[in-house]
Length: 215
Image (tube, rainbow, N blue to C red; front, side, top):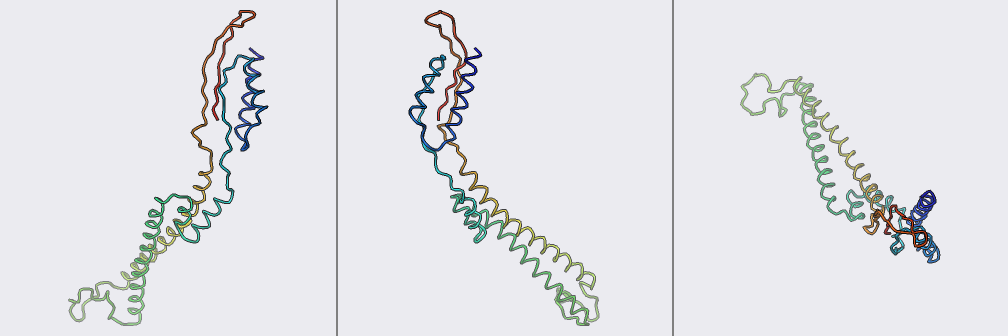
């Protein structure tokens, strides 16, 4: 059993090394491997060694570059077309939020500056246009200052989120291109079965496990 176990371990390492090669295994090495295993009582099925798809090391860099130039283009390069609407929806929401808050910030800031110089004709002094002469403004100086700080904060937050989503779009394209190059061939499989036979000379029983590996 020690000899059988040693042979099996060496065989398993050899097969694993063969599976990592892109070129076809030489026929002589394959025949020799099958002969040695058969002598030890292992069950072997014929394996087909096929050349794996070549890996393009520049693909992740290209995908990231394309997404940096035009968001979503890297996803198209990776053939992940369903991600493109998501990319533009997220970035579009960020841009809209930034524009909306920036517009309100500018309006309140303009009103605040005019109020400081003594003007009372800004849009927030009499919002509904129904105040009587000499009435207090609808929004005083403190209100204008708070509102402009609020929309400035929301605008800056929208900008940070938009930049983060833009960067995430690049990272997604890069990582996706890396993951696409992993070998996930359905032909890769391994089956373990018990076996038992009798030695034709000594009539002693031989038993163990049969590992059937398909490449």
